Image (tube, rainbow, N blue to C red):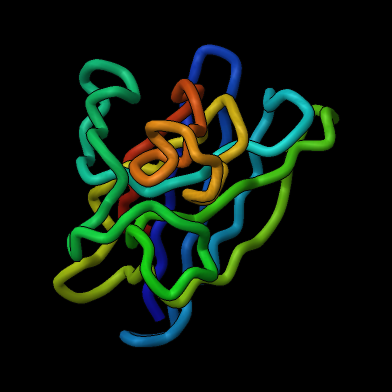
Length: 152
């Protein structure tokens, strides 16, 4: 079993994301606990670089090693990093678990060493018709981020 963790830091939004995978080719469980999100849906993505030296902008674009268009997490063709949305109720803490079969903690396209970014707005899953729908999901500003690292 492989395990990784990401500590999210932002001006108002902070939290922890834990990843577990039972073996290469198996789905990854993504468990999150995030404080400070406004009510509603927020884009939740793996970005290409494990770099936060200039805040979340240093993380670069969505992790997309196969050159696909942005889409939702259940789409057949999507960025590897497209995890869709998390939904905050407006309470102090947003918790949940996602299972994803495209990301991986092991292998050539591992997400370990890359960055999780939480966005200010809802990800339109590539269907919104905005200029940036097929690249970012029109998910808005980056409100929190952290580099994914190994844990025990």
